Length: 183
Ligand code: ZN
Image (cartoon, rainbow, N blue to C red):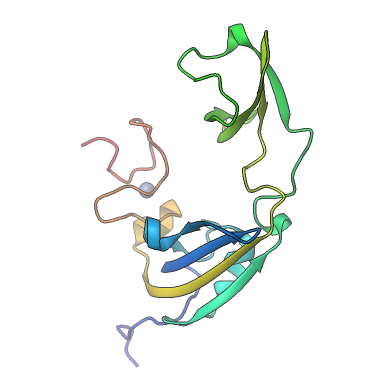
């Protein structure tokens, strides 16, 4: 077997193309039929750990049902993870409606999201739990393909799409170095 032999098995550091349907509490909430397959690098924590672990060793074309408990997915629901923000401190461009999701930074400056759960006379209450926190997830997956990651992808720890950056960052000054932030 030469080093060129075709890759067919999900192993660490390979880019995996994954078809999936995500079902939560009996309802389909996300699927590759709608959004296209996910490309991710196995072993880099690009996807939730409980799913990544189950995909290791699968072959191209294989299908599997994977159930991931909340603690191995988006974590248990934390009832303490809410915060009241004074209306006067609240950015004007954000609509004051229950259910609106907004991008915020956590204490360490990492991007995260919060949902408005209450709009009062003087303050807005935000919930910092992920919308899927506390929920068990059921995935129907199919391995659509695997390929070797490029050296640059391995260095960055994420997949570089053909014409679109997958680093999940809209920042023009992003220094991930993938070259797609400043054309
Ligand atoms: Zn990159």
